[in-house]
Image (cartoon, rainbow, N blue to C red):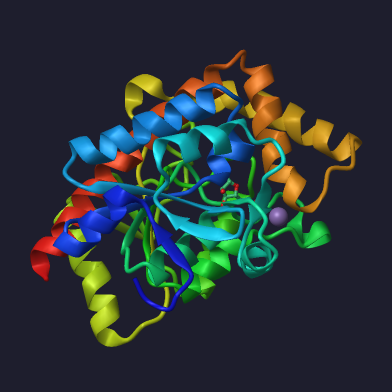
Amino acid sequence: MTTLPLHFSAEAASAKAEGRPIVALESTIITHGMPFPQNLETAKLVEAEVRRHGAAPATIAVLEGRLCIGLEPGELDALARNDGAMKLSRADIATCIASGRTGATTVAATMIAAHLAGIAVFATGGIGGVHRGAEFSFDVSADLHELALTPVTVVAAGAKAILDLPKTLELLETLGVPVIAFGQDDFPAFWSRRSGLSAPLRMDSPAEIAAAHTMRARLGISGGQLVANPIPAEHEIPRDEITPMIEQALADAKRRNIHAKAVTPFLLARIFELSGGRSLDANIALVLNNARLGAAIAGEIVKAR
Ligand code: PSU
Ligand code: MN
């Protein structure tokens, strides 16, 4: 398609050629965020949800050194079963491609790939953020800096309460990232609709979000937007129910000396166990909800062109 080392799926290539809306999807949620087989089922459901709402899905991953913009069904299946895939962020995506390895893209790496592919909107579950205790560990997700650099609108259900949400919002403000709560004033907290913190911005329609995306580009402002879309009420786990499980998972991570890239996958897996699978059901519901909003925003951006 260009001299860029991008490999489009048949579906993503035709959507791009016809100027139809595309929604990028990440793959770390598949390899490191959910257990098999729910990871594969969810990935397929999310793609179907994007299609049903008028856009083409493009799940992004590096397969044996190929930066894939959209996966064919067999590729998605193989990735979901691959427990040796790297977890790729800005720091390691190029080395993975250059050395012919296989890796799943986090929010940061998916944004980079989506932008290279000309895709404006990306839907996922939750972004990485400032971890609790970051004043000692310095554990701050590269996702936050990526939002400051790369012009992609990311639809997520806020950030998980395993993180330090006030510090995450402070850093996003410092980095100049618009944080837009969708349809409410409160910043959502992933499994719960409310964090108790107000989001800096609020928008109530996909068209408004699309217009803001386009205006940033016209002004030459680098970086993307974070759209924080609350989980549907019928699927939420209220804050007082999830909090003890989060505390337990954090204590376990500390005791077992979990560090760096392993932290987020460990906490997600532990909360899955502690909640008897309920955290996963909520996670699936919120990703589908984000896929719908992402498709609507992508549709509005294309309409406005
Ligand atoms: N949130 C989830 N599921 C996930 C992740 C976040 O609900 O799988 C993944 C995303 O890929 C995100 C990454 O970019 O975790 C952040 O990892 P870290 O905290 O190591 O930056
Ligand atoms: Mn980290």
